[in-house]
Length: 544
Image (tube, rainbow, N blue to C red; front, side, top):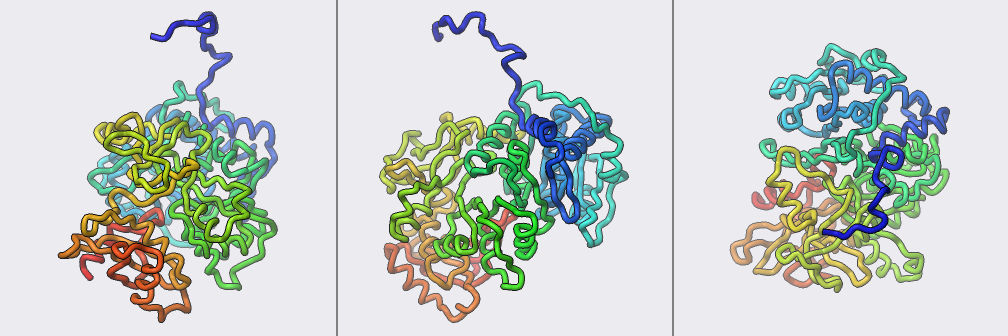
């Protein structure tokens, strides 16, 4: 037991010096300090912080009037439109938990999520009626369904509920007196990882972690005051990496995009003075490959925060030439989105291009709100040497790690084994403390007893000027157990590049056992979050 000191007497926590951390107070403050500043831009819509805050309170009031309160789940099936931002505040203002559904999933998966989260309310855009209708028919729960009729949506879509979103808001009180959470560890959102229908993993975020991550984004990405943020990252993905709350910290402007198209992105940047955006590498490819007619000169340098695999050197160069300043981050749904950033050092600018590329290929160091990040031996739980060679599992510890998996104590216990969150990612630690991913545990290729990291082979392929995208998996092999199999998308104008040429290219930089034995040209399948679907690639490899 820790001995008491003079500071342990008469200095107890009380309401004057302790309040639960929550990102909801950021909106209240900004609406008070900058009530007329533009909070949301969408098409012809311009909405001030005064109106934005009033609408979130209306939503909270209307939900509370229908009995929604602490621990109830409110699911939403919405694209990156204003109501989805409003739900990030209005839902937790009641104590309820927001479940943002992935708009790319099928009806069976959505039904399983509605049931697992025990959704009491479902707010859905009518564009998704074709998926939501069978999902509701298949689900056991019977949530209150509220339809959103987006004036910017010109397509068809059946109305599934008896309530309209705008009418629902109109029934609420714009001066609704919402309260802070009783406990900062109360759940604020529920996010599902990709998984099977029978075994969903619902990642639970709390108010404390969301608050700290929101502020961490400000520091890490250098937002400054009044940034203009373009929503190219799906808000259903880790709650938009918590930028849904971050913008309220700095009185920023949300520029909503219903669909991410190159012309729409360039137009938004030029017309609204966008300063920041986030996304996967596929968004960078979209912008760089846009025809000249869809592109517009950037009015100023624009910060692009990219998650996922490190972008190839050619892509980084193209983004810089186009006027984008790229910051590479890494994280998981279980870490509130990005929790690692490749912090750039000014003296690295003097390095050679290959040396700079090697630095940029690393994932980096921990986010400010993350207490600990390391590469450990998962068996001994000891740190691996910081030699840039010894492979271990990347692990996290801190306040921006999930509370756990909903209704899945076994998976939660395993994820937190040894007092660390086990990411399932394999990596190395360099002498300066920067970590670099090598592979997912499940994606490691074992050929002739040798471990081969698919990311290393993909990096070699990406350096070839003809390669637009690449995915590497293991293909069953009678002699070696598994052989390295590469699936490649060629850039326009490089259709004549052969498999043999790419194999020879890899021999120049990889050990012989790592060189692809098979190269197939195809459009790479993507999962619901835009990442290469390696499960499908492995099935394709078996069939070829």
